[in-house]
Every structure is written in structure tokens, then in C-alpha cells.
Length: 341
Length: 233
Ligand SMILES: Nc1ncnc2c1ncn2[C@@H]1O[C@H](COP(=O)(O)OP(=O)(O)OP(=O)(O)O)[C@@H](O)[C@H]1O
Ligand SMILES: [Mg+2]
Image 1: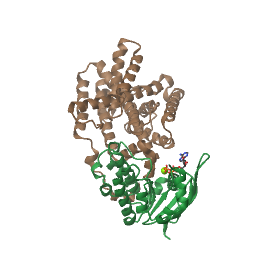
Image 2: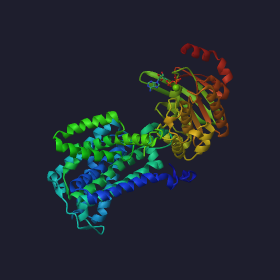
Image 3: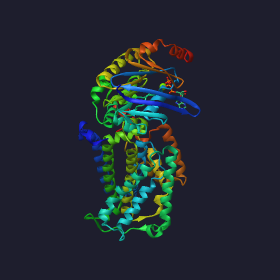
Image 4: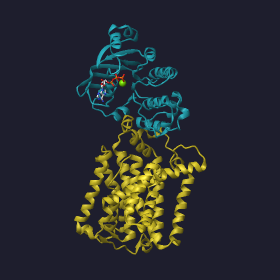
């Protein structure tokens, strides 16, 4: 990876890095649908959608780690919760810098912290990695309960969102419809960034490491940092979701740090599937819809959800994204190549 | 003597099994050095220790420098490259993408030209899991060849290829070693390939050095004949 050889290789053209125009169009259509839904959907539905879109950031981070590194996390509520608490802190009088700057630094800071963690744990895989994330998540949860002066303990913190941020009025952010548009636009921007990342050499290197780390090392690379980058991305995205959560709710509590919440995100990621980048987002929407519909019918909705999950993983091991992909190919009559988005 | 790559007393023990013991070997620029021996003789183990895949006994020198403690990736950037007996590629990546990664890792290299030479040019944009086994073997080899390394340690590159494909491969290896000024160590069971392109042969048996010399002499050496008939069907 020496710099002196950089010029001997033609840099991939920018056009090669961008997703197909059709994919970009779908992203714009989704934002358009969000605008329409925000203005016309009943409040209950808008609120449900907004919650699911915010949690979709978490599911996306968990799914990204599965998709690129093949690692399963049971502790990603931690970066989401840290993002939410970080936002609460950035908005508090105790913050050392202006909230406009502080809020923007939270996701990069949490990403950087997870990059360092990634450097340390780069050799850990499989079940051991799952246990490690569980322990990490639990220790953050415990810390939030213990350090009452900082976190408000189990009572949580009420956040005073200033009336204006970046010159905009913040009232809208605390309504379901306003936040829905902002969150969907941010989510689409994150998806676009991830799609570009996957096409860069760094993205392909990350996939190569998952497939055959030993050979990557024999090709002249160190694998520690690229793996840590993926972990960092998978934490920064939930952290951004956490920031939006705080701006929307105006309240944070350790509930968003529980291992149960991490587990829900994992269910969303598996339900949605990892063959397409957007899979976990579909999973998050499906999860909230199922919970809403089934929760009204029976208090045993979790059991039904569990059954659904088993059925999905058995019949479509590639999740909703895989099922949609297969359906799309059948409809358009193209040869099945298993090519994701 | 212009040995670019020198191994001294390489050895390896797996539990109680002595897989390799006290083997010396030197590679010269522009020469193909064959390493042969019956199954389980320690040929792959030799390449594993020499390439830094596993830690063992002995010392490895490259261009006069002791690289025994150098990590595999660093060795590759210095110009010491290897291929794998059990195909070691990236199934989900296109062949172009993985060769591009290999070129970047090695510090440069012409992916298109290499692919054309090995006959992989028509499948460059296919994923490695979609092409034939013979082509996957060539991808494994190509990953080692990208960027014109100075030393190539090849573990049975012709295994799984048809007779015709093996012949083409042998021709390429001959050209590569001569034109790129590469020192090649070739582990190979296909004796037609070995006797056609190797300048020197070293024979291992049960992890130990047996004989070394020009192919014509090794072929008729009684100890070699005994080793082969004694341990393989
Ligand atoms: N990872 C390992 N663990 C235990 N024993 C091993 C391991 N790798 C190799 N061996 C043993 O070391 C000895 C040498 O094996 P090696 O693979 O080097 O032989 P080889 O000459 O390459 O054989 P082949 O022609 O079948 O490829 C064998 O007895 C083998 O069983
Ligand atoms: Mg072998």
C-alpha cells in the first residue's frame, strides 16, 4: 500500500464508483414518498415510520458488519445509545463547544473509538466476537445506570433542544413528520456513501478479508486497519441514528442501551438480509409493522415474531432483500446471477 | 553463485510429527527449481515455512538479507510471492477486482496483460466462484504472479488442470522465469512438467532432503526411485 506506487495504477473513474442511475432514482423516490407520507399520513403511522427509520440506522450498522465482515454483534445498542447520550451532552450547558459543531462530531468520534477497539480485537471472530460485543454493550449499559451525574441514571435525561440549530427552527425535528423527512434523507445519504465505499478499493479489500484473510496478507496487505474501518463504520451509522433519536425525543434513558435492543437490531438485520445494502432497513420497517399489528392483537407478539424469524431464515436465508431480489429477477426475466443491488 | 533466495535448515514439527527437518535450498534468478517427493514428503510444509505462513526452524535469506522474521505481506512487497496447493482465492470478487487488489498490494502490475497471458481475459469480469476449477487454479497462480515478483514459490500450480492446460502452463512458467528474471521454486506432481522446465531438482522424502541435482541425474538416482516406490502406490 505504498504511496509511491499509487501513480502506476489508474485511479478508478468516479463514474465507476457511483451506483447505477436507477439505484440513485430509487433513493430519491424513497425521499419523495417520505415527504408525501409526512404530510398526509395519520399521526400514528407517521410516528411509527419515524421510529423505525431512526432504528434503521442501528439495523444498518449491524447488517453492514454482517455483510462485509461476516461478524455478528450483540452489542450495537452501545454506539446508538452513546450517540444519543452524546447528543444530550452536546446540547447541555456543560458542552465545551457549540451544539452545532458538537452534534456533527458525535458519529465521527464514536466511529474513531470503535476503530481503536477494532485494532485491538482484529483477531477475534465468530462466537467470541459476539460475546465480546455483548460484554461491551452491557458495560456501557451499566455505566449509564451508574454514573448518575452524567447520565441521569435509570431515570434518564430530559434534553433541552435549542429552538434553533444551524439557523433552522428545531420544532419540526420534534414532530414525527418533520423528523421522518430529515431521517429518511440522512439514511439515503448514508446508503449512497456506503454504496460508494463498497466500490472503492478499500471496500473490495474489506470483502476480500472476509472471504480469505490469509490470502490477503500474502498479497502484501496488513488486514488489521481495514477490518477496524468496517467496525468503525458499523458503529458511526448507529451513532448518527442515536443523535437523531435525541433530537426527536428530547429524552434519553438506558433503555436504548439494553442487550434486548441490540438483539432487536440483529433480528431486523437478519430479517432484512445482507445481500443488499438496504436489507436491514427493510428489516427495521417490517419489524415495527409486525410489532404494531401483532402487538394490538396479542401480548405474545414476540413469540409470533420469533416464529416469523424462523420461517424467514429457513425459507429465505437471504432475508427480505434476497426474496425481493429473486422476485425482481423473475419479473424482469433476467438470469439469476445473485447480483446484489 | 547468484542465489537470490536461500533457505538454511528449514524444519517444522506438528505435535509429534516431524513434517520437515534440516532442509537447505537455494534459488537462482532465471532458473526453475523443482521440489519433488512422494505425498507427505514435506513439500508444502517447506513452502509454508519459507513463505512465513507457519513458524518453523531455520533461516530464510532474500537478496542477502535475513527475512525469517518478516511478515508474509512485507515479503510480498519485497518480491517474494507464493501460490497455494489448496486454491486460495476470493470466490465473491470478480477476477479483475482480485487481481487489481493483488497488483495494488504488490505495488503495481499489469492485470490485463497477465490475464491475457494466462487465458483469463475472457472471464475477467466473472466472479471467481462462477468459473471452472481449472480457471480458479489459474486465478490462484495469477494472484501470485501479479507485479512480477522476484521469487515465486509455487505449490502444485498444475494440479487439477487438464494435460493440455498443464502444457500451456509449463510454457508460461518457463517464459516467466527467463523473461521476468524470476527465481521459481516449483512443487509439482506432474513429472512431464517437472522434467520439461526444471533446471535443478531437489527431492524430499519423509521431511528430509534426499538428493539434489540436474533432472537427468535425479531421474536415475536409486535413492529417488526407492523413495517413490517405497511410499506411493
Ligand atoms: N497442519 C498440519 N498439522 C499436522 N500435520 C501436518 C500439517 N500439515 C502437514 N502435516 C504433516 O506433515 C507432513 C508433510 O506434509 P506436506 O503437506 O508438507 O506434504 P507434501 O509433500 O506437500 O504432500 P502432498 O504431495 O500430498 O501435497 C505430512 O505427514 C502431513 O501429514
Ligand atoms: Mg503439498
